[in-house]
Image 1 (cartoon, rainbow, N blue to C red):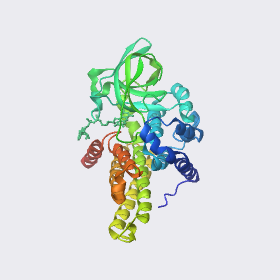
Image 2 (tube, rainbow, N blue to C red):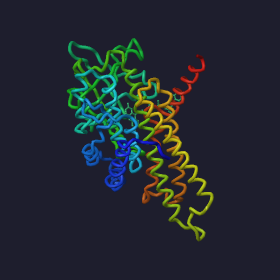
Image 3 (spheres, protein in one colour):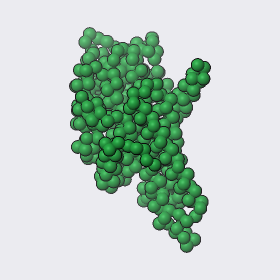
Length: 383
Ligand SMILES: Cc1cc2nc3c(=O)[nH]c(=O)nc-3n(C[C@H](O)[C@H](O)[C@H](O)COP(=O)(O)OP(=O)(O)OC[C@H]3O[C@@H](n4cnc5c(N)ncnc54)[C@H](O)[C@@H]3O)c2cc1C
């Protein structure tokens, strides 16, 4: 399908596709096994200016936007969903600074994030506060020119590897969700350490780790926006980043579909290629249609965000919900088309199924996306 991409967007697509094929695909299985952070690939992405595409021009980026980020994330995910999320999670950690940083904060942090000299992470989730984010317990108490942070964030992508963290903590517990605030925290700040590194089902090239704050002294200049804005920062950030998760899902699904079509042509049973059986053809046709429908939705939402449309929570949630469900179905069907071989690690397709699962869980589970969509629908109906 022709999405009428600009010449610049086609360049981003070609560049990301080339890196994915030449550099990522050959090492995807290795990183899946070792669970090491893929620094060699991050350096290639940085040298290719891909971290610049989501940062405004005045702070060292190319100012391209969310659609470009989606296009790049999709192409990288087509080769490895795990490596792609190391890239996309840096955008997630950077968006709060782009959206809510003051001039000084933007000048201090964005150029290094745009060049890929540093990568970012976003810390919201805690052991007892996942979907119910307002239940976070990490506190930030004002003490003179500083805030003192105490608490633990868990399941944080790029944890320990990133240099810059945007973290949500409670500055006033009595105010509930309105008592949360967002901070920029540098790796190396005294009192900021890293805990358990998770062993995961999929996206194993990415690091998922605890952030531990023990009387961590953060300068007051590192508060993003104002006290009490923590969940506004979070929601506006997710509006921009959820299309990226959806694009990761589209890329994973497309990658699995590519493998399934190739295998169906090569594999012979009953004296014919399995691609000649209508049962397989119809599966492939449905898979291709679902992937294209997901891509159309993701690109439409990304275009709306780039055009400056506000109030995109429902649309972003729809893109993430639909694309991630498609990814899970298409990757599972791809394994089915490979038959018993699909179940074996000697073939690359089972990794796609493992990698797809997380897109239904992080940045809000798909149950939570449905809640967001339904609430907005009901609100619109009441008008
Ligand atoms: C690999 C990985 C990377 C991650 N990266 C990050 C990161 O970089 N930064 C970050 O802050 N977090 C990150 N997370 C956390 C992720 O966003 C949470 O895991 C997710 O939001 C779900 O929270 P939970 O795991 O506590 O599940 P829970 O909230 O305990 O949910 C358990 C189940 O209950 C369902 N449920 C909960 N509430 C409702 C409801 N109201 N209605 C219907 N069903 C409901 C959920 O959908 C789910 O099926 C990551 C998680 C993983 C696994």
